[in-house]
Every structure is written in structure tokens, then in C-alpha cells.
Length: 102
Image (cartoon, rainbow, N blue to C red):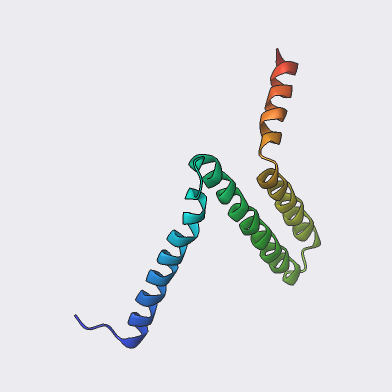
């Protein structure tokens, strides 16, 4: 089966992205506390994904001239970014809610 040059470029790009993704995760295995480093790395990456998606969503809503959509998307992105940077806040909040319920 012969691949066209466009298909070869796509396969090459997919392999390069996969290899780069695997190599980026190797940083989290540089010490003895593997899981803690892996979670920190994941939350750092998730933070930037949330920021990018929030900006992209706000721009898309802005192009549709939906000011309410822009505001809602930015607020949701800000809350998610805050939770990515402060994951212990969820534990603290759930403990407080549990104390109020009991």
C-alpha cells in the first residue's frame, strides 16, 4: 500500500507529536516522588489548556457578538484555572460543606 506525500506528512506529524508528548512527561520521573511530580506536571499542562480554551472560546463568542457568552466563558475559565493552580481548595471546600451538613 503506497501512501501519498500528504499522508506521509500526516503520519510523520502524528509520530512526532506522540514522541514529543512522551518525552515531555519524562521530566516528572526525575526524582523519587513520581506521582506527586506527575500530578504537578499534569496540573501545569491543564492550566495552560484551560487558559487557551478560555481565550479561544471568548474570541469565538466575541465574533458572534455575544457579550454574555464572553463573560461566562472567561469566568468559567478563570475558576478552572484557579482550581488547576490550587487543587487543595477543593478538599478544603468539601470539608467545610461536610461540616455544615453534619
